[in-house]
Amino acid sequence: MTPPINRHPSLIKRIFVFYLLPEIPIGINGWPNLRGSVAAHRVSPSKSVRKSAGSSNRMVLLKKEIHAQQEFLMTIRMPLMAILISTFVGCADSKCEDSDCADTGADELRGEIADDLEQAAPSRSTWEGTPEGVGLIEFINDETTTMFVLDKTVGLDRRAAGNIVAHRDGGDRIWGSTDDDVFNTVDEIDAVRYVGPRSLDRMVVFAAQTGWVPGAEDILGVYDGVSFSVAEADATIEMVNSLSQVELDDSLRLHARAAESIALAQPIATVDELARLYYVGHSALTILKSAAESATGSVAGGYQGEQG
Image 1 (cartoon, rainbow, N blue to C red):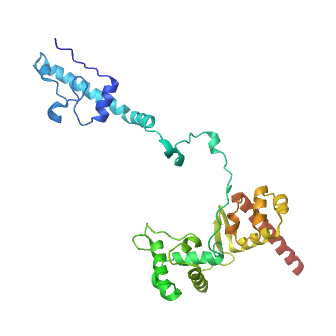
Image 2: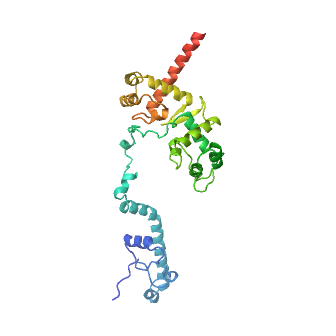
């Protein structure tokens, strides 16, 4: 006796057919029909059904049933795929260590994170963080600074000039395109092959002579989110070097570790050097900059009063 035709395949069977074999027609029993062409078997019932009584009506019903099944599976396809991926793929082994997959969004993970708990490595070049260093970076990144200028006018080694321009302009060797890799620090320029202290000094002198070095009111840089003009940086460094650890801690109310870090590093040459210190970050720089501005204003007010 021929077993009855299963018109209601299980949900798992439907998922298997719809997701893993989307281009193979579905048979009457819910499994993929692998015989013949796709067009012939996508909606056609078996030969036994066609030969039975009322086969035309039954074929219409089967088409409707298959269409309804496909519409149902379409509605749950994307949500189901998301569940399957998150369940079976997940995060594997050591990959979690370098990703955010372990972030559950819990409130405790969104708390304020202490900044600058580690001291940054000192800069390689003494020009880093100085107005001359900033002028050098601006000069190197400018479109008019070509290999010819660096080689013939500045007097660099030809290999150094070519490597600097190649680094800045990227793989297409065109300034201003999407693959440019402009210089952000003096240390980055110093790291270019055939560029050393002598090359840096020559470029700094040339940049200063041609007006690239920022003036007192020009922006020197942004350190840990705090912007400093040249004058503000000079005033801050002068004040920092004049205060003891106790004064930094008690009078300015810096964190004790920041005050200790600054005291141990004195004398400090630049804001860049200051910002690299252990426990000196946005909050400490903001306090120091504000204190320096207040001290400068008080001195200026006193001078104006005496002159008046």
